[in-house]
Image 1 (cartoon, rainbow, N blue to C red):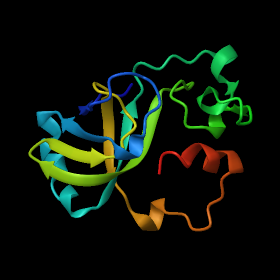
Image 2: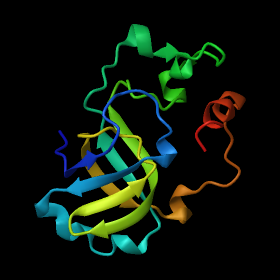
Image 3: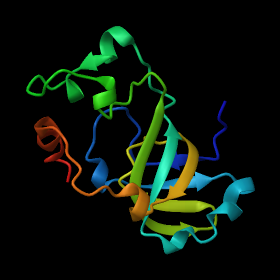
Image 4: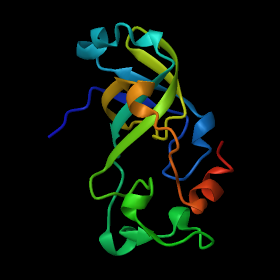
Length: 148
């Protein structure tokens, strides 16, 4: 079992899709882990791992579906999308790091609502995390054109 190391503070309080790329939020780290933030401010991006604690996976509804319930997009399996209602409610997002102050990490682009438990923070290493010539299906580009 995982134990949270902190919590998300975000202006987003409901579980609907947003323009997540524009959202600025804070990851507030519990005091016993605050010293673990040493050196993080030197990175431009980080990866936040969090528990989608309000997600409710129902196989008959979520195993295959149209992304964001858009009928103009193909019906695909849960492992082909970044939907919140998953068999294991784990969220992982690479975000822009804006600042680090004491036990607060301010980020841009975190797709987690206010109160979401944070499980881990990792630095973004382009050598590991950036994959050249990555391909996605056409429907992903259609879906993301409004967000970035």
